[in-house]
Image (tube, rainbow, N blue to C red; front, side):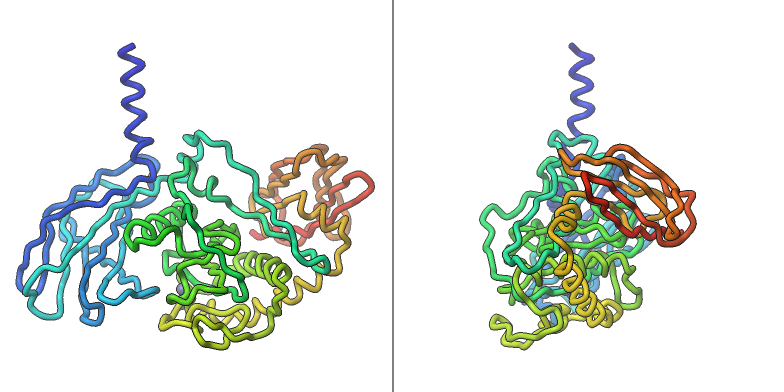
Length: 427
Ligand SMILES: [Zn+2]
């Protein structure tokens, strides 16, 4: 009995803390032009890629302030101001700290002497690793939602997505319980202004959720979708829910955020591929012209169907490099729509029932087949038809780590049909 209890006590704190951020109350003292906090002690957590420290200062945003966390060895961690969606009279920001034993203080430098300490809210968030959370999840991952198409002439499917249950197990990042819906006419492309070298992309999505909800005070993560640099798309607010992303003019928009910072870094092509796949579905469903423009009543601006955040707000989002790619995304969405309109329904249905990812791939491919599809055989061949691999079941994991860079064909035989998908292997 004692042994049983000690195990529970050992496990509980780990699980209870998993995902949970907490507001921290600090004492602040004025020292000249700076305001300095009492000591903070961060305890490292197992299975945790980084510690996220968030802050909100109720202070005139036009007067420059600089905020740091300084550890006891004097190392400064600069807290980046969130210039993405400013709010009058409020300064928001966060910084990632290494997941280790850290002692230190927060320092806020004001541009002139401080007469009184403004209200300051600080929060700490442990994202934990996604693998760890999924292993400790008490909920089976639900299958991807499918959406019915409203236009019969267009067959562009809803893309495969990472559901909220998958990126945040155990319902620790709940959606808005009272969502407001909007009739989407514009897709707004963002970047998240977060690192490009993440070890765990879903952990970043959880961090953004926590920051948007608990520090910014929104009802849910601001974006409808987020795309990581492997081309996976995470469901944020999801289909037709009004978001919080377009500088206060969110009606009729759907916000899709590329995870990363694209001011001087080119988004990987797989991100555009995913964006294109989703944009083709949405433009198809809502009968929108991906190459067109229209009047957006909420902002009073004429916008491209696929626009960047900066087109409607005083921000550099989605970064110069991603913004420069928007014409290419519009064109490839248009091409994708032409292609999927030409597909027969049979092929289209198969494409919805069989998911193959990641594509491009480097080490493995997952072939996911929905229940009750009578798969006869799956072949992988090169472009000349030379057989590389053969399987006899669906739901397969295919090791491709030995293959050279190039295009391959995955051929899936299903009751009188052969469905062929091009697979790009990249080394
Ligand atoms: Zn943005």
